[in-house]
Image 1 (tube, helix red, strand yellow):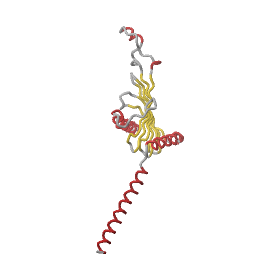
Image 2: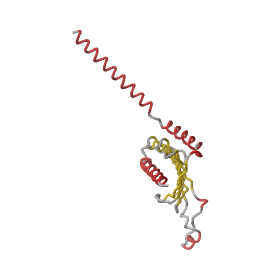
Image 3: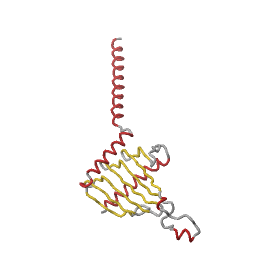
Image 4: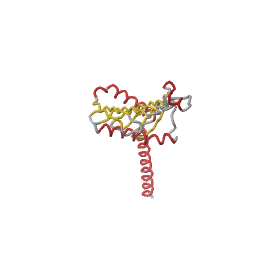
Length: 195
């Protein structure tokens, strides 16, 4: 009987030890996972670090021939490791400026400014009047849209729009934005690598 009690006592103690270890591991790993606020703070710290050291990085330039709206790319590299890439794309309905920030080769922040025109730039007053239209391209009617995208392990975790609102992660646009941001960054880096 004492052997049976010892067996149950040992089994009970081992179960408690296993549960304790599992809980501690869970707490440790949960503590390692960054919260959205931490990711934003980290991205902004890295952005500040990169901007401060910008003159120390090598510069690569390329024409952006892959994007729908043609433009230019400027990349800042520490050796072969990307730090910052700026893209400027000009289309008939908008012009877009994006800045990609990287940390340890991972995309962490994308800042986007998009100027949306009221009409295509080629739709001048003369063209509009010839077609009997009273509305034509007017740069003073251009609308600025700003978006900030924060990533962790190349996963979009936070999107702040031009009004400062968080776009919910379960929003269809949010879900579609992640692969779009990553592909844009990859295409930009690929074009800059070839230079």
